[in-house]
Image: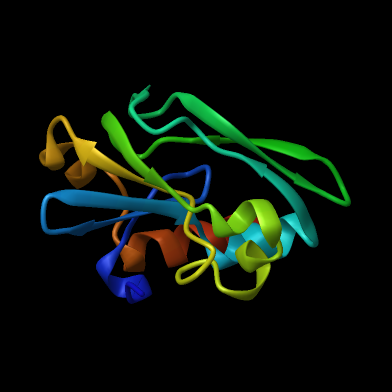
Length: 130
């Protein structure tokens, strides 16, 4: 389970953590809190390609359906099969058991353009202001 400080974040609230040659992707604790009760997650297919900033799946909650975007380009090498049986893992453990998919990054340096933990916290605080 990555520490929040070790992840990079998109303005759309996806996180990415580089672990060796693999990037693990999910949504932030803030995002899962805004979505509330997640009931379904449509993930990209293993072997498929994702591209930084493009939609690659959908999260459905009791409120609405939300596209999620890839924070890195590359080939999907694994998906979290546990989300099919228990999509609420996203709510209970967004940085742990609720991860979405893993990618072999085409260019790991792409993540350097994303927000670090401090900038993401500032972004979330600014977004929460009325």
